[in-house]
Image (cartoon, rainbow, N blue to C red; front, side, top):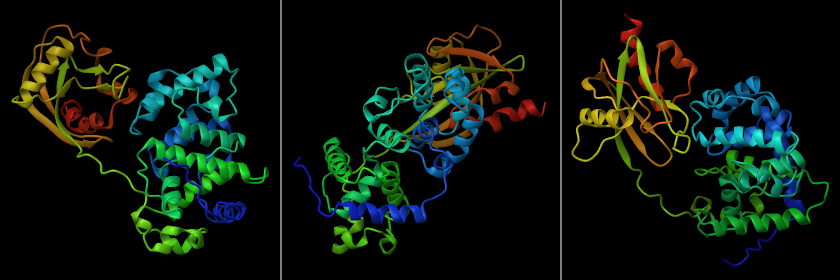
Length: 369
């Protein structure tokens, strides 16, 4: 793709944008004290997650693990428990890996450059640029969905933003702009201003062009077509799966299984079960999955509850069945571990949101007994 050289990305554009940002930016807890640890934690949490969702998680996490040494010494299950409901759990596991790596190999200090930060688990170009610029002042641009929307509208760039080449070209152009700005520029604020502009003003639908500091230099606004940008290829249809799980009680304890670390939702606990196969009833799915996963032969009883849940790339309908299995040893044939737990213990362990949705129906008989 040819290098894109937009006009009017100059010092005046930066000045207008920063003035708007300082007047209108939202209050966020990580902006109050932008220490490397707080900036890094917030940026990992903000990957693919809305600010309003992140704030209470961020505050709870900091209360429990206020600094790098506290996090590095943490138990993975405790970290996953605090992350429960935030999704994309590999972020939490990588957070812990990075904290331990920083303590072991970096003397508890964060690398201060984009290139250095990129070497840490869970840190890609976007997060490295955000931490390097906000915490350490490096002149490196962030390119996230908000920035791409602002940029492609301002310069009527019709290249598909889902292509890595497009993101790379936008990064290169913004990098060249940053290099030409005065060294006194606060690059962390400039990056946050670009993202804030996309989040608050240059929104996907009905952008508030009248409030934009760049309104007079925006080519898409001049053409009356801001919502035509950014251009991205159509998403494929989202697949839907039927999933069935077994609720097996024995002597007041419930059987749960831990997902393997490399799986989606890795290291979280769940009820044993899985996807329905073609031509299979949901009851037959439970029987097969329990046998394959735990070695137990169960008699499937009543349907207890059904919930729906959406992930980023697929949706599920999850049905829980009562299962009877008075004898036999449960083994982790397809899991990291299996356990029999009392209802009170469930609150201490990390579970996927979809599984948690089932708990009220599952625990009613026990609580009422």
